[in-house]
Length: 284
Ligand SMILES: [Zn+2]
Image (tube, rainbow, N blue to C red):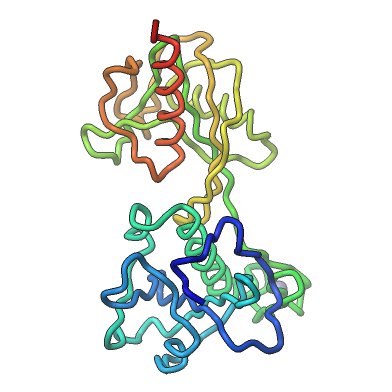
């Protein structure tokens, strides 16, 4: 099957249990958080069955991800001590962000998160005994104390707050000098997603917002976030910055933003969505 002709959005069907027999397969090979690429092959594609077999790397664990037109897709975790095999190179997940389309990035991110979950839960966090993997529901279980470990997802919010034609942008202490972004933060236990939006905006910049509108979500596998994007309107308050996190924040007119949002992340999509609507409403 020609990988380049596949439409992942409609043809990839996620699954947990691999079929018993198959003649073709795809393999996303991961070592110590990095993804194997084939030299000279661009855009990236996974290894086919022959390439994977000939590679002969020591496998730590293999996981079925799903199938594309009845061809199973696996992710294979290999020994982190392994050198780059000849003709191949391990690349960081980050290097894929802007190089592959969002659907392919989400498949690679899925693979990396499943490998991480399996690596991080070999032993029970409560009693320290070895855990056992179950294919029926993608879990690892401790037979000693019955605790179950599923792949971890960390829900978080990202919000584009507007006041008329202006957008609220903030610069994180760790960000480059001219890099401003939308407000973001992790959901806390007991919170609804909407409550997180209100709390994060107030904690980081001291403002109250209203009229939340859900925009969409993005899997962000650094390491395991699921970002829920919102638009919101300014309601009240003056800037009070959270000193431990925010270096600067302000209102920026949509025609004069400090930096172009990166269009591979949901913060970029949110700002772009606001810009389109602001331009449309300012056209005579
Ligand atoms: Zn246990």
